[in-house]
Every structure is written in structure tokens, then in C-alpha cells.
Length: 266
Image 1 (cartoon, one colour):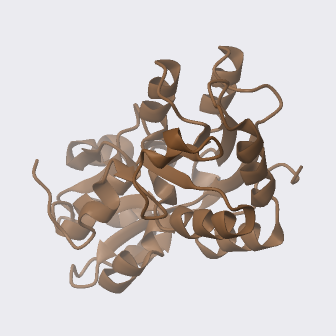
Image 2: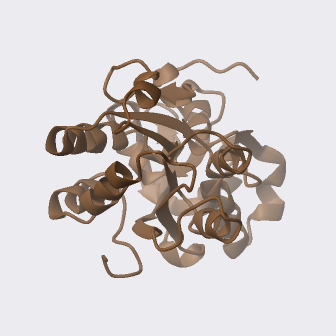
């Protein structure tokens, strides 16, 4: 399915250079970092990275995608230094397989999901997931649960409310949560079950409205970061992870739609 919308390439681009510098900097500068990041971070990570760069004097490039896809790329030798996952299980598996540094795992946030629709859809998302039974809801966008933690959370919430079998035929899948958001924003889906962080981004906040799906309806979306064993800039990578524990970084994450992590800051 071809999708177009106000989110445009900002949500579907494979490689985002957060600083505006060419990606080759990560190879030419021994302190530069190549970061792989879950796509729910697209509205916040560029700002967070820019702040880190100013404080550390380091260069950072960021590639966004589904956590499962990035996990597989790292296993296959992709030259990333740091991996921000939307599912804590992927970093744990990388440590177990020798692809990530033991002791570097840090749970930085807990994700939240929302039911989102366009301003002019006429669909009252404040009624919660039960609105998905409405005949006006013909397509429901979620992230592919095979690769994306937010997709798995959406399916779990639908099952919790005994709606999955009812609406399964309406589901359309984005490869990651950003593509699911674009499907909803572009009109290729009537509603989307997406990350709150994306719903709070400037584009989607202007074009739509949302209602949060209760956290009790799905397992916690524990998000964690890890340093890869292949990294040639481990000192800078550790500085980035330490920066995540600072109050300004934690406040930025919470302001952008994330809850505090389920474990204390290290």
C-alpha cells in the first residue's frame, strides 16, 4: 500500500542524521556514535541527541526502525554503537548472544499507547477501544507485532478488551510504529493504535486527537538501551547512557509521552 501524509519522510525515513552531518562522520571520527533507535523515539531523540552533543562534544547519527528489525541487523554485524529498543528483551538477547556489552543495559523509559484519529474523522476516541466496533472504523493501523513492541502491545490490549477477534479483519500493519502512525494520519486507516510519543509530536498533535489506552490493558512496554560489543566508541557510548540518567533527559522523555522506567535509575 502506498502511503502519503503530513508526516512524510520524517516518520518513514530509514536513516536520520540527527545533527545534519553526513553519516560517514560516524566512521571518520573515533568518538562519533552510530545509534540504532526504535521509531517511537523519532519525535524526541533528535532533540535529546543534540543536547548530548553540546554537552559531550561528540557527533551522533541515528537510524530509526522497528526494534526487531534493528535487533536482527545488529546480530548480522550492522555497525551500530548503541541500540535504543522499545522492548527490553531485544537488548537482553544481544547481551546473551555476545553482541552487546554485559552491564551496559539501561531501562530508560516505559512506553504508552493511545488510540488516535484525525480531527475530521467524526470518531470519538474518548470512548476507548470499544469505538473500534463502529461501522465508520473500517481500517485500524497498528505496528507489525512480529517486529514491533508497540504492535504487540496493541494486540494485547485488543485481546484484553475481547475485541481482537471482532476487529482482526480491520487491522492494517505498518512495518514499525511510525509507519502505523502515518497510515492513520494519511487517511489510509481510520484510527491507529500508536505510541503516545508520536501522538504528541507537532504534526500529529495538530492533525488529530487521541485517548490513552490504559496501561493495565497490556504488558508494560519496557524500553532499554545497550552498548554493542562491536562499538569502537564505547567511552562516548557510556557518556550517552550516563546522560540519559540526568534530570533534563528524564524530564524530556516524560514530557514526550513516556512514563518513568519500571526500575530505578542507575
